[in-house]
Amino acid sequence: QVQVEESGGGSVQTGGSLKLSCTGNGSGLAFDTYAMGWFRQAPGKEREAVSCVSWNGKSRYYRDSVKGRFTISRDNAKNMLYLRMNNLKPEDTAMYYCAAGFGRHIEPADYCGVSWFNVWGQGTQVTVSS
Image (cartoon, rainbow, N blue to C red; front, side):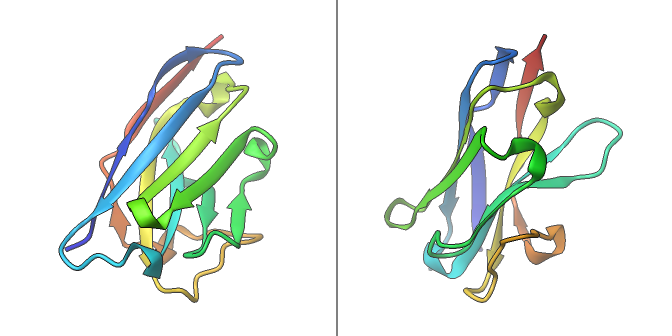
């Protein structure tokens, strides 16, 4: 059973930075066979893809509103996924979720679909105050 767990959320002021981390674990986990993604959900809104990355890190997706501010990365040797968030804005406030989708065929580029991912963490809250 593959599981993922997020950490690193918190409260910052506008313009601040945070780095989210996601640890993958589970019996027989082959982390490098999973595409990974960061999603967020604000109260009353649908869950949306923030950034996603293919199994080898070569294909990446960013939603337009975070391009140039957020950077996704992964370390397959450590079963880790990261999201570096700079210049945070109040509209970035949400619960952030890490997700894993099995298959090296998943190559997020211009789009990253929620339905591609079937393993989800519990979420970590990010709050940005003005």
